[in-house]
Image (cartoon, rainbow, N blue to C red; front, side, top):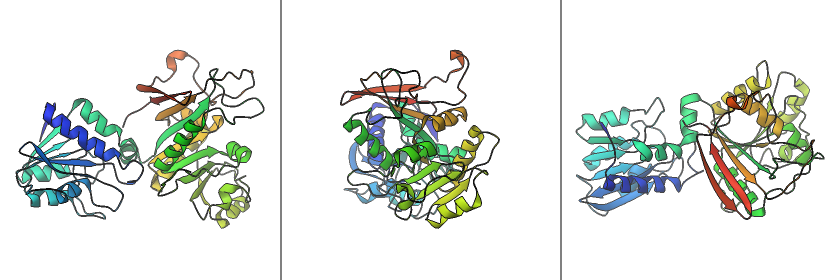
Length: 374
């Protein structure tokens, strides 16, 4: 296997593979997003992407769509092909059976059962295997950040979302926050819910807002797991989250301070309860994320409130921020800010984003800040 800087032709086909992969965003968990393009004699003869967990993998879709004999062709794929039996057979088998001469890969698969193994099998069978580096490789990794973090750490990728005024307030001193962001911004946030494995809030937000935390967008195929961080199991049995626990999964994260009776009442209503351990809130956040990871949660959209967001920051568990800044000024010393927690004493100690993207949505400014890459 060689690692190379992609030629213009290779880059074009890999960009297409990554573009195809992204079409299934939010639909493949616990599997990664993967796209594939089949090229022979300079012509694209097939392409495809992994559409959903349990569906055929991208490589097999591309091969099945081939308009001519793929023997001797080059297969461009956004993620290295699998070589293990899961719900579908190994892609390496299909590649070898088709007589593919060359495979060009944009990114590695960090899972223990896959990492480098499929590429080694192909190489040993005489297939030329090239892995690109640079921006294409990074782009391929970025579309699979939840999969990559879960594979490497066992914990879900955490996206913190909030809307704030120009002066950095997420609610007035009285707790009013409806609505800081625009209707279009709120619709986008619902699409993010649909793409996430789980959506989380703190008990304060749950008690004040009585939210459902479902993704209310057209065409949603599955609802995210709703997660409430509720150290004493105070979530009322008549709230909308508990009332809908048998329709959309609900997980309540408690501490050892929660009474057995309160926990039993939540479980009887259909909620799943996990107990986070640790000497402080940051440690309990880490414990909860590890347990959510064991439940198969690869991505978690953290929606509030500021106390919980501060605990996640103190735990070093915020991977990306998505911040709507509305053209409003609220003022007020006691008005609420996005993050509480311990924070830092010096600006020099503040975490700097690795990359940011800025866009405008219906009068709001959306800032997406990537804090870590996996």
